Length: 269
Image (cartoon, rainbow, N blue to C red; front, side, top):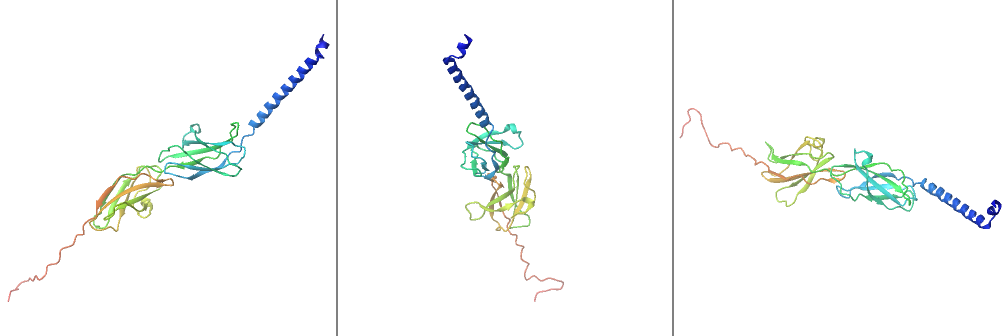
């Protein structure tokens, strides 16, 4: 009976089908493992390309593979742990390795903040590459506060300005002035405080620091209004408060008396 069962045509056919199915399953499993073991090459050269606005960031990186189907971009606030990275969007693949990719972070970013970015490529089955290098971006500062303007003792053509830097990432400040006969503020120059610029004064950029400068060459007995803004690579802060003052009036000394004669023994004719 065992011999008849083993040589039955129906049984032999069933065994051959089973054999084919088993080897097909093994082959597909092997291919699947092979595909999963070959992720795209990691992107490289990640950097900040530009700041489209004071609180937005455009990134650039280089694709090193033609096997990716997309790129994923992640971001965290500088100083946080890597577990704080979150996805902020994706970019389409490029046609050839070595091609640059641009991506603008669509999120609303906070001013005066450093953000860290990283990118990786994804294969069509979702297999990720290693991460790129990390790139950091610093958004524009928050506005200075407490601007005040006053006349300068002994000078009828100067005004003294002082304000407080309220940001952690200011590089320098620009001054804006509106004088006699002017209907709009205009940029009159920049300062690092004691570090120089168009106006050299005291203080330096840094949160809580007081900066003081003197604006000279002004018209006597005239009113001027000012505001200042903080700057870094991302652009300008919002304007500070506006402050105004009037230059001093020139004090003309009285003329010397004329035609006065005196002395002992003097007399009229």
